Image (cartoon, rainbow over all chains, first blue to last red; front, side):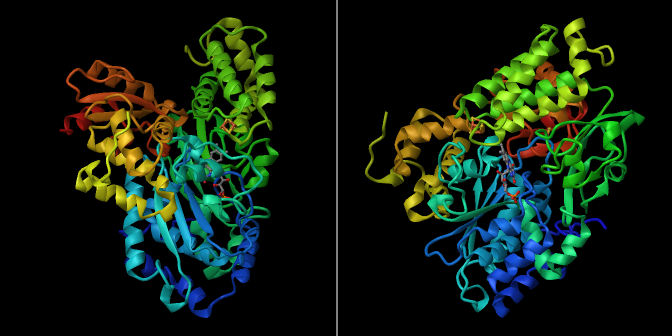
Length: 424
Length: 167
Ligand SMILES: Cc1cc2nc3c(=O)[nH]c(=O)nc-3n(C[C@H](O)[C@H](O)[C@H](O)COP(=O)(O)O)c2cc1C
Ligand code: SF4
Ligand code: FES
């Protein structure tokens, strides 16, 4: 059971074309919903039943999120898609945009119909030029076919959709920073509450969902929430796109049922390169705490299994590291990233990420001090939960994970001013 | 330094104006400012890959924004360049998946070949190098972006071939 939802057209020759998408029944469920005038509440109910949880990282139930919008409140509402795909290790939304843009468009129109929004934006990261062009081409096809614009297929429902291009800032993947960015400002997260469902884009009620979440909607409505839920396991409905990379033979994007054993995913990805030993896995994007390879081999790819090992499924970005990797150097690179990408609004994040990077950097370069590991614990604790957005936690979590499982490696660096891995 | 022009169409060439107008049309009429990111990118591309203060001021005038609001955007996002870059801006990802697939060898190779490091431009202005964060293509690590194009699964030999193929 692979490629059943978002990548279901991947075997076609040019799956990004309208005609090819329609050859697999694309846009049929939209037509049905519009002609039968299906009740929006029933759609939201179906999405709830599906057990779909946000694929952007936080895993919030999508149906529940949609039900927070007061559908009949007057005035403009918005559907926003998050195609910023910036979490290191994640490269799945790029494939949806490149290979199945119409399914995302159909999903966004259906989301608009369900919450009573007549306008949508897809925020695509600025570096994704090829996916952007594919998506734009698909938009044009959809417009010409009457799936976008006024009075869709004579139903009286209007919906239009546009792309916004990012400018290279990880923080714009955070939903409120993303809204600021569409408004033509610096991407600095807003205080919540108010949540976007009440005060979103241009101050209007807005739902924001990840590309994969929205692209899953047409299949959920076509085959039913239960069908989707049953693909996965308890608390983790459906299948999921996993971006797997690192020291493996066949890195790539795999759409497989939630709950699939990690060992099977690793096998699909060709196993370890050069027959090396698996050392560690970062299971859900670089913010997810690391899990030792051996432990990972016994886990399944679903929310509960990964959470039970003290980490998170996040965006489904799996980074596999073999025994030639130095964990100090790995953490140094990650800490550099969060420090660079902090928007600087809150002191614990702005200062704390700098501290984390500088301390890990000095340990890595053989200048570590005995008190440094306690210092890292302390700084990470002082950031966690004390910031406007989750980037602060995202910076602290990998540090805590590394120290939990690889403290001896850090200690060795401090004691011997060098690495215990290989000759490095 | 603010440009004061009555007729906005004098700020840029007709073609650039038309491109910016396409972005403006995507947003509510009272939110022209939403087009600032698109406009800056268009103007930057037209100017050989970087933004001058004068260009940012013109964008501000075109979109009825205070210049400071445009500078804030241009300095916040990493894809806007405020200093000249090479005709080909080579962006190399060094984040974890690329790092563990030896992006450092790619960086070293480029440095030796071009005689520049990150943040520098070759004397003939043809190339510049920039270190970037994960570009969402880790399955093809190590990777780089030149202009709008991604290049994946790099080796030093592949890098040579790519650079030779550029104008
Ligand atoms: C620092 C930061 C970066 C994020 N980056 C992304 C991203 O690139 N793509 C994404 O879909 N969600 C990202 N998120 C999560 C979004 O804030 C939001 O939860 C998500 O887009 C909601 O959609 P979902 O419920 O469908 O997952 C990020 C969050 C934070 C705190
Ligand atoms: S936690 Fe960091 S990134 Fe998030 S708002 Fe605060 S300073 Fe900005
Ligand atoms: S780590 Fe280099 S593209 Fe993701």
